[in-house]
Length: 256
Image: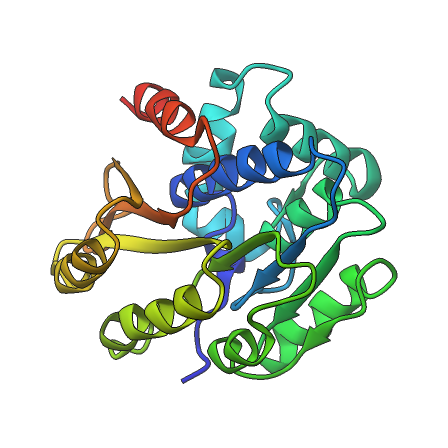
């Protein structure tokens, strides 16, 4: 299934949690003068317009980044990347995770992106190819398995499925276990929705049993509209960089 398109949800509260932690971790990694590899399994289009009809229709960005951005300090890496995005693409521009990563990485770092949806892949290439040519239109899980362990070995992977296929909840723990076994020094970050139907519970139980020292961070928020099933957002991070737990605690306070 390829029906999911993130343009309806870009900049929502789930994005804020995911992107704030991503920018924090990349800022930490780039402090050291050693190259790194960034891998993303479900990249999306990379750049969104919050004044687009789709974003305005749902109102999720207005209730998300529009309402909460000022709660972050001006020097927070997430706010800095957002400012760079607007300076380059206009005030309505919002960076997805691959663009946030591209703005964070250095010339000697490596980036590998996968996006299976044909339209999203085309738009991703338009934004990213001038900087980062390693963009594949294929299943992100397969790409990640083929790449790991990457060169350089230092780095991180963001796993961000749409979960439009319920089997993603069943297959993701085994996939992460395989990748972590091959790339034991890699930071592996999984985003997941918290739904009223509770499909994430079994997945998180499996992951927690396999990786008891991983960082698990969740935030809750009201449903975007009547009948909407997502009422929160979570990140499960293996080998989280130093200080990520404190950053997660700050996010909890911001969302409270």
